[in-house]
Image (cartoon, rainbow, N blue to C red):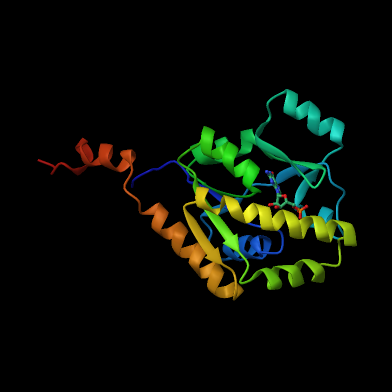
Length: 207
Ligand code: 5GP
């Protein structure tokens, strides 16, 4: 069997595009991809602690971790810090596990510099009006942060050109299927590891 390093998938897109539901769907559908749990210093929303959505830290703890270079990337979003713990991601990739990060464009751009082999997928809402409605329907936000999120979303969409794939998330099941297809295709991509194997004894006929 060909043993490959894991692949790193980055999923970004504006708040309300449906990244969270897509990630949940793909994790349920495939047993060869794992979600990286981010750290944040924002307060947990209802039910989040039980679901283990984030590692919740104080700002001080988060900043200590930054000073110890413990994050693969981190960013300040809507006044809170969010980051991807480095060690679990590299360990998983080295063990051949595929990892998906659900992070914003600032984090994605940092990863592009340090890990250009990552695969970048951008999720778009079907329309800006639909995005506005989805953001409003989320009952966990105050009016002020709804507006912040909507205007940030408009800005974030400009970074689409830095990504490899885009998915317009109109019907969730179809979007999950598209993400599934991207992951499958990327696991079949010819890489240096495959070429090295082909030129090795592995394929030579036994005498
Ligand atoms: P929320 O507060 O709604 O859970 O997340 C707000 C934004 O932070 C979303 O766009 C989400 O993708 C992003 N985010 C979550 N975790 C991380 C992370 O570890 N790094 C970065 N850069 N962004 C993150």
